[in-house]
Image (tube, rainbow, N blue to C red):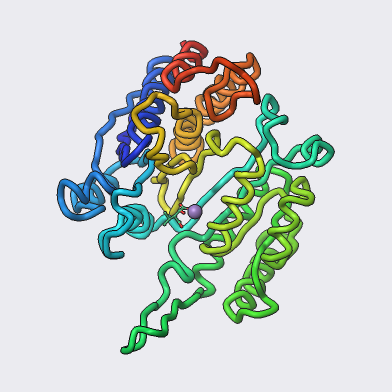
Length: 357
Ligand code: IPM
Ligand code: MN
């Protein structure tokens, strides 16, 4: 098969980790006889420095013309004080909106080899967990009307959702659940917010009419924040709004204890997706060959699975990663307390590549 992949390395450790993921994709392509063509585009802080804007037109157009996008991370302290219109995060929000990627899949899962890294009490960690957070990504308070009054001493942001927006992301969540444990938990704040009441009604209507085989329950977001640390094994698929999903996915990923390992996929109606590690640009360790490439590599595997329908190839990458971890290889971010040696990022990449020959 032939695919065009747009690579947006971004800032900080983005270039190192996407570089590793591209090498892994090349290895898989060679092994299975696929042709992947890579084109690199600039976005984020680097683009602000060079072109004065975080998401140059060529980047958005290049991504729109691609079969899928692999992104590293954008932003860093250097660009934190810029006006909001040209902040590095705009690149991410612009890509999501421009590519109409309304669904964000964020798995929070404990790698069997890393149970000890889980920050929860051992008896809770022992039960393990594997949560797929399905976050709405192009609506809600992130994109609703906002502003200030004339005096500038009062500001507002608007949480706004239509049935159409809720249905399309919920549909994705039900579909994903059918391939997992068939359980969806819809998270909202329906005891207070009208938008949440519409969310709940809509998800239930869809569940009853189109997915009666999938178990559906609701949880208020504050309770969900508690349950993620109290009994994360309860959850299978979680579906929620843009902002609740932003917060809960960070919480869930941190609970695994290995945020450097977690991948994500952003999907729309078409086959094209945007795949990125969830760890961010980590400017403090950039350029030191310390960054763990695993999250980016697993993001590349998600691309094969969700955009290119290459499940076997994706499984092979996932297995290469878990095998390397089971053999005990660790980068600095996941080393055992007291360990004196660990792999550099490039060495970890090499270990994984060796499994893919
Ligand atoms: C994320 C990030 C972004 C978000 C920021 C950088 C705009 O936190 O991908 O979760 O809030 O969506
Ligand atoms: Mn976030």
